[in-house]
Image (cartoon, rainbow, N blue to C red):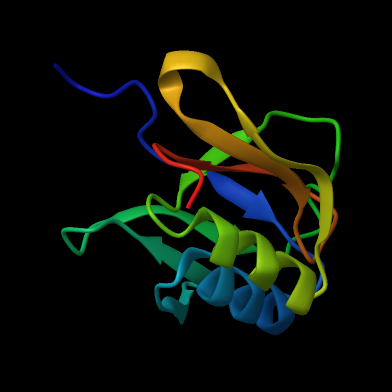
Length: 123
């Protein structure tokens, strides 16, 4: 079965700051590259593919009240929340259970976007 989400762009104001934020929170490298005339931070999947990017454009701005993207931080949820705080983000709703689906924390990233951090455990 194919996944419905094929790509996402996360709007940012300061690309370098957001690359540092996401690399720390996700515990994975974010690769900075330029495609045509757009510089972005590529977010990678576990198997080395790309799932989305961080991009600073005039077309859209960060928002705390748009679509919420859940990022997988399985087994390191507490560390990810600590990294949010250490890298300029804000914890909106700390770690809490979401029934049979595990646990999440709702945060604002370093740019002001509302995102969720998800793990099967609260560790």
